[in-house]
Image (cartoon, rainbow, N blue to C red; front, side, top):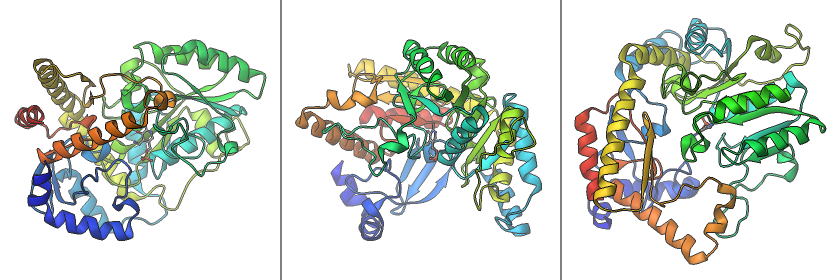
Length: 440
Ligand code: PMP
């Protein structure tokens, strides 16, 4: 594996060294592999990437989820080019495509009666919380342990360092998370207890869930979990917020809410919403709730202030609109989902044949490959498991080596444990990938 990096990745190595001087850690994203050094990529096309040394890889990262149609999908790229020729990327004023995108999302997701665009999933979740607090007048928010809702102060919560048990995210004063509570996935009794406790202390504004379970189903929830959370929210006057940043469009055009048949009050969207183009974030929901972004005109005169310079820009709207139209036309979610099923079945076969202590499962195009052999339902106690320093070190090293081995065998994944398939993953691509996984 190390030979691969030494012999075939010299241009990447040079760039990675330059990067370390001007970019903290040498990469812009915590999840980017940088062991033994970060590879730099120059072209992306469908299911494949090429690095600056000319090596080709199967791309199961798909930018972290947004490119359901495959990387650099030509029909969308063409529409983006046309828009830029016409008006450039942004004017700060209303553009036809903002309306077209909002109408299209509302058509596919009945729970989304109105849509407000923002800059990222993180921003959209922040907006959703503020909107829920404004609408309900309540102050508490409850999230599910281990769920990722972006990196805002109030929600980067419960991620603890393996060795010490200290919070991973620092720079957050206790006050910022004072009204954030956590329940373990599937623990409805605890959720009810918290809702009841909060009722006498300012009320619960929102219960936030990732409908497949924390981290896109890394810690899965029962089939009827979301419906039960819906019932509890109704009982206690809290809004149900579905964070569909990953699942929206990817598990189907109606999102995970269509799959589970549960109607959230607020839906948070991102990633696929703009087909992989920047500024992917939006809040959608019931008209009455959404009008709290305006104030005065709805049922409440209070106003939740959200928004930014590039919040709605024609570039991401034209990209998002045409990406969703293409998802409709090509049945992208179904096809990428079948590729995910095929990949998972093949991984299962390898795991069993080789008697590996691994777990693999998928929900359509979202495939999990857990090499730790255990499903950790509670990341806040992750550190207990890794209390022994040597064990933590060993695991970190193994993760890095696995990541490097995947890369050296031409596979790019999300942290070695999650795989996003796309419309571009034909049977040939999946079979090629399975041979490579088998070698690793
Ligand atoms: N919510 C979920 C469920 C996510 O997976 C992510 C990002 N992976 C976010 C929110 C944050 O989105 P962004 O990275 O666009 O800020």
